[in-house]
Amino acid sequence: MTALSTQVCVAGAGPAGLVLAIALGRAGIDCTVVERRPRAYLEQQARAGFLEHRVVAYLREQGVAPGLDQGMSHARCEFRLPDRRFCLPYGELAGGFAHTVYPQHLLVADLIATLLAEGGKILFEYAITGVTGLDGDRPKVTCRADQGPPVDIACDLVAGCDGWRGVTRTAVPAGPRTVAVRYPFNWLTLLAEVPPDADQVVYALHDNGFAGQMPRTPKVSRFYLACPPESAVADWPDDRVWKELGERLSTGGAPAPRPGPILDKGMLAMRSAVTEPMQYGRLFLAGDSAHPLTPVGAKGMNLAIADAAHLAGAMTAYYRDGDESRLRGYSDSRLPLVWRAHEFSDRFLRMLHPAGSDYEDALGRSRWDQLERNSAAARVFAAEYVGSGPLIA
Image (cartoon, rainbow, N blue to C red; front, side, top):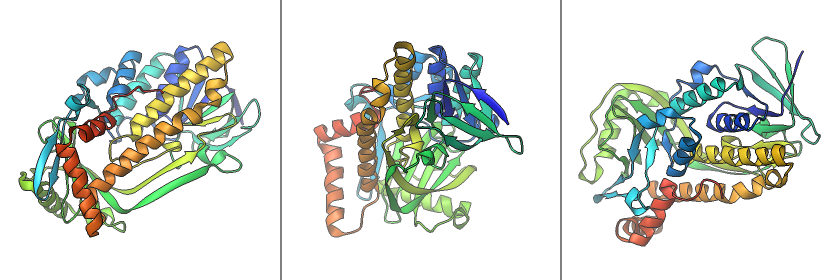
């Protein structure tokens, strides 16, 4: 048994955990990050890539992601409906703001390099097996590397940034209250060597289901295909994928995408959940550990970084000034913003996936008409989509 000691133990080296650890280190707060996966995996696994304006502003201010300068700026999207297609210049409608497309694994690589260069500590390939003592003054995080001996990390505070299936969320003795929804479809996710459609995201509605094309780099696109919830990746050979993408993305009279090599293929069960409260004793949950949500609206990583920024400020005030009020109020402050993002994602998802009844279809047509023709409705959508408000309330 190896015993370590730190002030803050961060579970998980994703965007939330790394942003938090960097901020704490710069404030002179001792911090240890525990991550079950290898560094190479984190820096290569392709995932989300749309960063809100306010998140990019925060990361630039902190100087932690130099690669953002190579990210693509996007400020409009195209909606392809069965009877028409239209472009929404959401950046212009939101006051000149834009998304930055920068794949998550590249951001994580930047953050890891920054943290290690500044003397931060990350235990890669250490799986957390238990979190105890959350009601006391010195919680303990137990972890181990492969077949090695257990390592006990005594700390003042624990930041749970290890995802929905991580250990920290389940460490609360009484069990947190979780509100969840499972949507009646999956999304097939694809990464392909296909240039993006101009400089915009494409959302297409088709009788066969939703399809989307999202830019990742100037030469690579992320594609989504809605499919039944019982579908598996094996049901979707490449020929079928390109046939469906061609049909769905050409709706509204648009050209079909040119097929290219598929680099990655996966199946995403469409579900969202929120854990309330986001804290217990000395444990504070952030990102997917507390509130995973669908990729519709690209809010997941952005919410996680906002959680981390809030926690960093609260923990710094606790250690620097002895002010525990922001830590005590962490969950109450974050949950309204979390639910607002979930509401936007749910509303947007229901627009892209009509329920099928005559009534719901008519409601859907009204929503699209408002988005296309009603500047007030479009401005509200644009502001929520691009993230034009403050990062921390």
